[in-house]
Length: 350
Image (tube, rainbow, N blue to C red):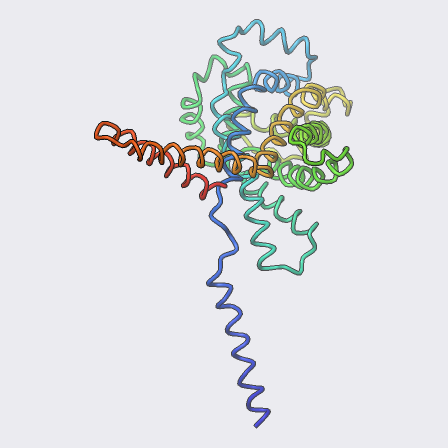
């Protein structure tokens, strides 16, 4: 009899565990990561696009900063922001995906594989988020073609390039995809893995909000300089692959040696324009990303602010209600609608 009870009890245990996992989802309906990433990328692209274009010319042609700046000056202001639409679409979505999917992948891994060390979970979540970002490769492809001056007279705008690339097939939109995958995964691992370590080295800001902002910006600037320098040659290879329209697809290995020999077989020339990306562009970008993380991590300040606003509105509504007349009913209804919207926002995002 004890044996029968033992054998009958074990199936109950094994069947109840999966059902509980099926009923309870590890993912929460929280759009905060996606919204913060989108907003950070929008500001980032708008501010840093001219610097990005300067760096791209150096990356593509191996010229000095002064020569690249003279090229942009001769082309005029009307062409300075030529090509901003693809990166604006691509980066806002990809950064939103990077922060949002990193959070979602991390939750899934911790839920289904809790035995994994935190470092492994972080690396896997960051790599998967980088691979998900790579789906947006066509935007980066179109941006590269628009920024290359040899195509200025050939293609009018993003839509025109999209139509022309379609003639070569869907694969043409994903030229340079392998380079993007090789770049995104390690970049995300370094960014998400080192940002906490760097912040721990910096002085403790205690409860000061401006102290947290300062440490986030400093750590973001350092990370931007470090990651962009490490990944710069991969970006050079990607740019040379994507500035070709039609023809055979070149591997990363073949493109590297072509660029290496074209620049006098000097490895240092693969880093032409790296100082622009390191000192200015990536520092600005990672600072903006750090501010995105600050908005996410310290959203409790916004919660407190909205709570105080709600108290004030409630008090005002109470006073209006006491002196309510026929004429004040529309005002009362508007106030009620506003406070309901504030409560919805509070519950949805905070």
